[in-house]
Image (cartoon, rainbow, N blue to C red; front, side):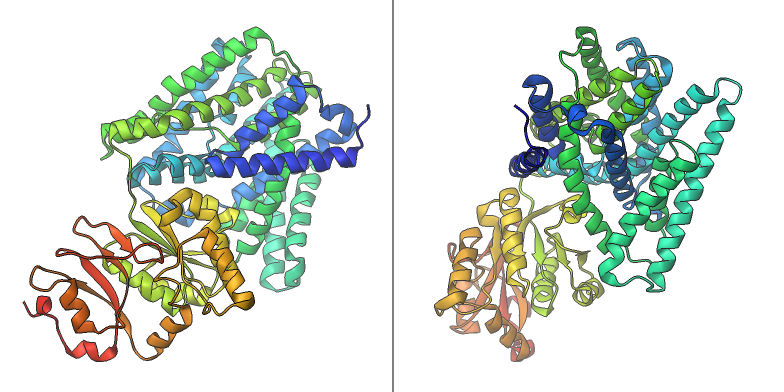
Length: 608
């Protein structure tokens, strides 16, 4: 029975959405479930036949999708951020990447029977991790701050650099196939030159148009996408296979142009990449012809073991030797290196092009790469958490707070938390508020905290709670829903915006109540706290002692005192909500809203 193409595409999108949602719920990289879904629809059940469905359009569609994915990834590579990183991270993305490539190329040649050109290409492709696979794993494993920083920044940097290396290796192979031994390097040089020139030219043109405001804001995303695809197509027309290099160079150049704000375009590209990835990886996995030869599977398992037990430990050892990284931290770093989106995307595209050119062993590239992706994600997701706890490098109870919102109330709460020596991160899309928070010395994230961009770039090391304090009800609700599975049901709180007086406001608040407890209970609203700040009230910390306990504190402050949170004697944060009442003891530090006249007085503890 022939299935209507529109119905089939819609069904794939629905299944892909389900896979993405399930990956979010179980804290796994989405690529794993998408590839497994594609294998189920393709080789296993025979329901999906991409070559018959798309025909001659398959290669151009895959090429354009991969071009957008590489461009979006390269937009995150900012050299200014790299300069401030530690030597271990920089060595890991240079020396470590070279060691990984060499070991896996050797393993591919010896164990999987790949010829040296394809083996080197395979080594380059699978040397890439990437934030889309690292970040979900870090949030599940929760290693200590040093390990998290190293792995997170390795993924951010190696994603575009590894893609660039893989593209160059691919072009080297293709130029050799087409030019023969005599003009091999000449053709390769021409291909690289055309790709770099096209990338720089497109980046300059887009940057010029954005700086001079030649394109209205509502057309900027469309214009950027059109120029990306145009640079890819024009570069390929001038010199075959130079288009991927062009879009990668274009993204890197745009990311590092001073005075050019690319956040909105990056957000758009991330949404588009999510759509493309959802369809692309299901289709690419469905293209695998089953059954895969036993020798290829056996060789792939052997390469996977070499990657896990030899290549990664060797890369980490070479990168962290003579550093302050402990052997326990080194052991966990040597275990975690899942492969992700770039490896899957470029391997499938390269295999299609190389098979067209008749390159030997090109048909083995995709199954070996997919086996590497699925194997590393499954093995490391299941074992990294227990290993981190056994090595005693896990952070079991992160005490830091992610504050949603950056107005004066949110900043006051964030500053009070930071003064307690807790890790605090203020996240908001309001630049004026974020700028004020930075001037107060607070760590900030400028952008939508519930976007894919935040999933990739929001640094939640040491963060284990969320305070939704924005003046935007929708953002608070979305933040509570987004972070509740990650932090836990009782570690996500929001502040009621309006009094519960019935009607629409109360129904909306009830919906919010389903997502999180309410800070200070249902009786306290944001408007009440803002009114107190207008009168000069501020948050003040007071340490309780045996002589000056909580009863004396309440008596001194008066009946209407508001205590939103406190720090117990073990340094753990306790938050007052509608479901939890703070009962401080001696040795606790309570934080309360106090009136301005309190500045002229001192409690018994302070007089000592």
